[in-house]
Image (cartoon, rainbow, N blue to C red; front, top):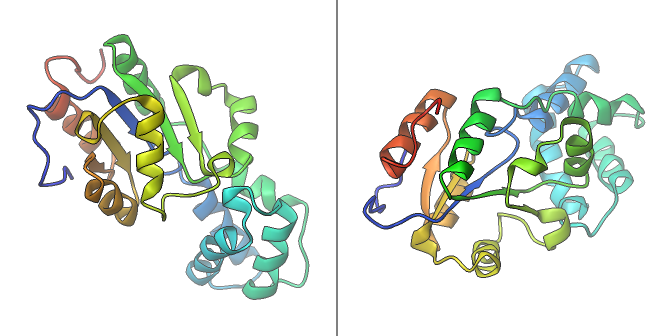
Length: 215
């Protein structure tokens, strides 16, 4: 839904998208749940452990390695040993959503800055090497290289400073309510992603007459 403090009359210059769960299917969550089911573990709990381990290992902010992440998750999640297929189980589930990518291209043609702001690791680079989506965006901001993630509200200040965009001129789309709340507190306009049709409708409301779904 659109955050209540938004003023649609304020000119938006940049649209910032989360990656997993917005532009693509949420491969991290679904991959971890698949691993858990295969090993007789509780999928929701294993995913919760994974979401914490990727931060606590430092991997998501470039302060730790993939091996550090898997070592911590296996110990906490109840797996005896890392298996080489674990990473593939995650990456193959990050499937780009064609309607979302079409919307991004429409926005860019209409003159909006299109931006990825993702709490991701170097996996995002691997996914781009596979799918080639970086070229649809003006800028890519990845927590792995920024040294901080969206749990830290100052990341929004840093990104907008780099873009030379004021908070009311930025629209941020994410499927994580906590990230949305932190962005809104920093003055950004926000949309909590629920499904693709809802988002396309919200984009039209915010950006008309400059954006129409399917154009």
